[in-house]
Amino acid sequence: MEALMQSSPGARTLINDRWRDYFAGCGYLGLQSHPALVQAAIETLQQYGLSTATSRGGFGEHPVYQHVEQTAAEFFESERAIYFVSGYLGNTILLQGLQGDYEQIFVDRDSHFSVWDGVQNAGIPVTPFQHCDPEDLSACCRAKLRPGERPLVITDGVFPISGEIAPVRDYVDALAPYDGAILCLDDAHATGVIGEKGQGTLEHFGVQGKGRYTTYTLSKALAGHGGVIAQEATVVEKLVRNSTVPGATSPSPLPAAAAAARALELVRGDSSLRRRLWANVRHAKEGVRELGWPVANTPVPILCLGARPGLDLARLQSELFARDICVAHVTRYSSTPPGGALRIAIFATHTAEQIDRMIAELGALV
Ligand SMILES: Cc1ncc(COP(=O)(O)O)c(C=O)c1O
Image (cartoon, rainbow, N blue to C red; front, side, top):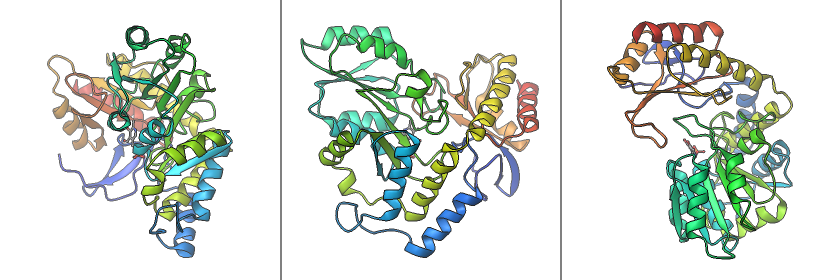
């Protein structure tokens, strides 16, 4: 199916010349055309132009990037934050930056491509463990770690297609026997969305603390661009010192960076968007469960409708599209279940009527 997006993505999106109910992508808070973000981008564009055209190590340091970092540190309640060009690179920065603090890597098999790229670049022994399986993680640690060795465990916090939350509390227990163990989460789909304050998966489980690291993206729910890691000042300094990425990449375009900072300010002071999102998620999940898909009772705004005998998911997606309802049909992305899935993304800005119509049309088609 060829699709051309002709408006800002939101609950209603213009695609192929028709306004449609849009349940795809990652704009979970519906901020992509928020007037305050657009205004921040315009003002920055007028004042500073598009980019610094150099990395931040030399003359590329800029008040806009410093403002993103200050705002992110406040949002995630940390001493400091580092802002870099793409959430994708956050895992590489963590794994390079923390070298010397761990001897072996353990990675969830179904982790995102960015996690695997980071792992493969680290040049440290790697053991994959079964997806979302703390017992297998424990078994792998027991089998591989020599006395005194420190494990680094890395996984998506929220998986992009399956919508599962990694069982992080159980991972913390599995790592308890190992002094200096490190847990790293890629929270691209949890940033601003999961946890009372939107701080992500560690906050959701209440297990923030020493040796626990998260990489965030500002390009999805927060409608900006780039990635962030928020930590103690000494850790941030170490990441900048040890990783090749921050000094060797051009940072995000200035208007997008300014919009991201504005988004962080907006959702820090006000949890109403998150609450509306979670209410919509609850409502949509109830409907999908009634159609026989067992989606987990979590605030994750991703509903994964797996394959069923006799059901053609590609046809289902195109029938919904013909009724002006957009959902993704995924067959190859990381964390896609066997047989593919329809991925339904819920936004804070969807109306109950839109969700009801999507469920009703889906129900009529299955
Ligand atoms: C789990 C995960 N991590 C990282 C990324 C990349 O983030 P960014 O778009 O900020 O590079 C994605 C993007 O889709 C993702 O799904």
